[in-house]
Length: 384
Image (tube, rainbow, N blue to C red):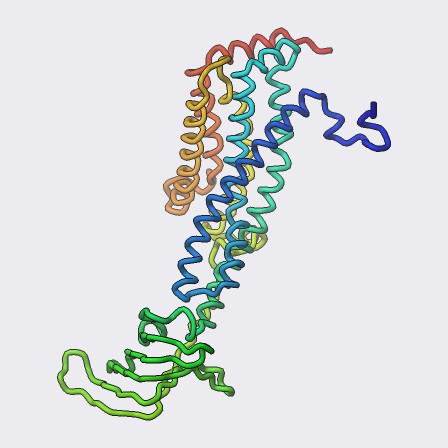
């Protein structure tokens, strides 16, 4: 039989682990990957439906929709990894308790210290991955998402996605309706336009029109042909009416945002150099998600304890409540820090300490026999 340290199976840190450790680590990892995939599919699916609605309305193009879905996946991956690992630990260790596997392992000398070691070994690569995602990828993805939407606003196609609905441009100063578009997408048919200029409201109807871009300035126009125009002040019965053979309406390009980037799109390096309180709040948020991986890995070991053949869904509900409390405290801690409710020196780190304290209290109330078993195990243990 080939050994793990044979030429075909060289020794690695993973293969050098004891069989029990590899078994627990493998079970947690498989469950973790399954939960991550399911959560990503659910969240990306909901985001895809939102982007699909925007594409149907002509706000974004099909290529931009695909890019937005990919960017949204990168944005969501960091925040969903900590709860996914937490649930994976609860599912795996809880199943082992229910199936009496933990009883057999305890009889073989596998104690709580060994469980914590395996769980933390599983959580370490997840911690590093979440750190990279939240500190580097998530700010980039936030900025990229805004950039894609700005590009779509500035390059909106007036010939697609506009038929049969009222379309608004120039911050509401230009509203038009198109009944149909030619097969080549160049000619617009039966157009109704409302535009406002210098306080005067103009209504224009035309049998046909087309798009036009000024080759020198790059400005975009809707050119209407063979139509009528009515112009006046709202509430005043005095208005002018005229006919035209060709009439151009300029479509103003959206204003490009300048100045400081939104805080969630700023790089972590720039936040480290900043002394602004809001930047410190955002920086601590990005650091708290990787720390949540380690905190909930520690919490998951005692919370997964259950008696053999006992129910498990109560543990899942408790875990979900724990994480909901954590996420609400995470959001509230930022608001409290910015408003001065909590001192700036305290930061947002107290949320993790509070979660550890709550887990300890729940453990003392619901599972005192586990505490007694752990204390007895460490008391009986002798150095080898």
